[in-house]
Length: 510
View (cartoon, rainbow, N blue to C red):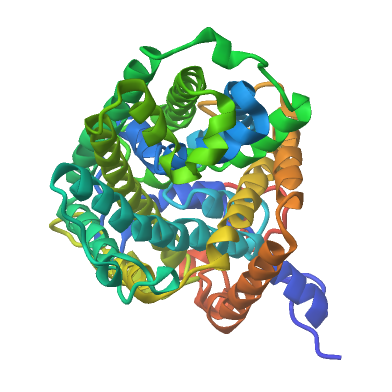
């Protein structure tokens, strides 16, 4: 039997043990942090403030979900949908607190990919990165597809003009090519190429605008508020609240967007944890206000009749008897989608940037423009990929699988907190997850619970997606990894750099 030398120069190890060590090798936290901002040809520029980081996460989270989710959640919970939003927020909080600790400890652009690389090994990190591709690129393509329908609603209300379905809908919805989807991706791409500070400023304006539109909805709806509409408060009992909570949970996905800006934040150790927690708090307050205003203005039994996508518009129509409030609501949806596309595309490019720096994806993704301090080629490739998906590819079940991919990444972050507390208790932590280890364990538990409740077809699609990712890792990532002995720089070959550790092995400072 063929054997290979141990990385530490000790007893030779068999091929199976060598393969396992290779798949479980971790990247030292000190090295991950030291490489922060460095790309091929230039460096990323630290320009994002706490406000901009917070609104980046709000921008990625506060999308079309709130405009459609009430029509699906209220029939399950009745007026107690406000408790469903709180329940979902608490569930998201367990993961958010784990994200906050690791973002403050490992303030880089890779998000859960980098956290997994430091704690759980290269293979798990790759799967996390592959899941993030599903969460970011595929999901934002689906969001971009919906931009045309909301744009049509706005044009129809404001100008009595609409675009033909052939050029405003995807092939899966009766169209030929979705040109509005391509347009919103192009707009986001131009902003991203101008620079991070410009993108953050544009997102800040859009977030304030869409929050303003939702507060406008609340103000109008509260004028028609009737206390009798809240009785019975929980007609389906706790089972209905729980079912609605599972449905609205996915409206909270996106709070982790700030963690992809770790290498462009001015004070990442302080600001990243705050941005993640603050964004979740802001989104929760907005969701609860919108939910309470909606069920107070329109009896809960009528939401199912109004259709999911028209539920908020129906509330405004009944409250005012006029069409102009719905026009403003459509404008809010248009802005909401544009903000989501911008922030999620940004996050996708930064995750690929981190993976490329580690050698797991081609080096073109880590090339940084010395003038603009942004990964130009990376941004253009991501934009082209998303635009093609949004314009001409029926995404179907692949979009449903994004929920499992996101929850898997969330769960790995919570596990990473536990592993890093055990292996590197000496690391400086600007934020510590409270009630450790209960909080991260609950985070894992809730993620597994929600994953188990998703449909069988969704699981099959997710498993197929994962198999494709594993094949890509075997064919490219494993061979080109910077931690592979043949690819290490001379100063990385010293065993004290700990680039071949398995989880549970204590890292040594480089």
